[in-house]
Image 1 (spheres, helix red, strand yellow):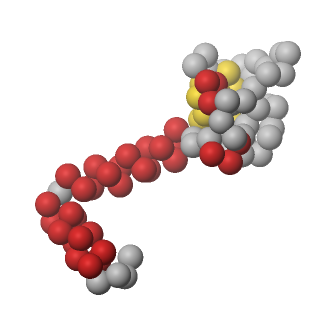
Image 2 (cartoon, rainbow, N blue to C red):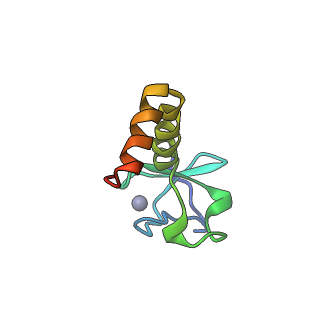
Image 3 (cartoon, rainbow, N blue to C red):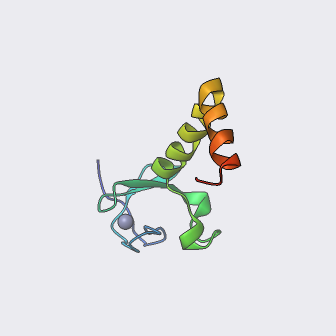
Length: 83
Ligand SMILES: [Zn+2]
């Protein structure tokens, strides 16, 4: 793996590091251990850019909702107003 970022165009939206690893479609920050799609950098406000790893966590939490028991418990917690 080589660090290619010359001229510097992409950076880590989390730590603003220019030392990123170019993977083609996405970049990886060796400091944050996070991957970001290049399309998002410069297009979306830095604080709104979601890393691949963070996105996966969100998707996984939705995946849990496929389980009937999880859905029922969630609805129950909403009804009781204690998230
Ligand atoms: Zn970073």
